[in-house]
Length: 291
Image (cartoon, rainbow, N blue to C red):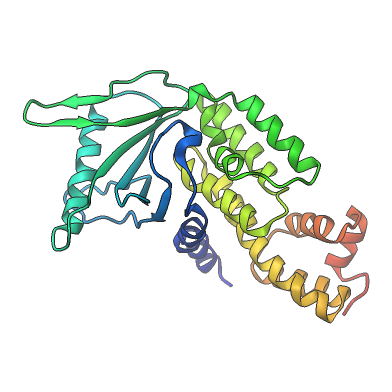
């Protein structure tokens, strides 16, 4: 696999969108402080382009009452943001102009912990834009993080609300640097989730929800973990049938073919097969139990 092919694969959002679409269904946004119906479906964000400059919606959901929820994340309050929201709405209407118009369009703005208040309406005289808001400053990130960590350390499953809070956790911190550090901490917590689907859901959610604050290196790492989790789980099932050693070798060979870094493969061997650092390194180097 060439570096170019690898890069294209890492930046392909189709897999992440599929994971989110399957797992966001029936989830509630009330955990963020937004009292709207549960999510029925995640919608594609590639709306018709009206202006030359491309503008991408953070999230677009179909809710259980058949209303469409536009969700945008902001770390400051600027009146120009309202122009962006109006553009989103026009583009959604453009998408549906040949079909039945949406029952209702909701403009939901989730403010990071940097913002504690913002106007609910924007008036241009001939029109009024009404927004539904959530302020993540009302969430105590330390309490949330500690509660989730304690459950994971005891091998307990997380509730839907806790999964949703873990996804949004980095945005509950003030300041860019604290948010970046919180992304890494949230990823490490997510890696401890036993259920494979829930783990990939949270990791994908962190990547999508915190897209504006994640640097390229961190984004690449998260995608790597998501990909590795899916591949490793499949190969582990095969390994149980063929024998532990064959499964280990199959896992190593497959992750190597995906150009997964050696240190990440060793970490996976330690986690999945309860190996020591030295034992995992020997397996990787082919010095032990060569198949």
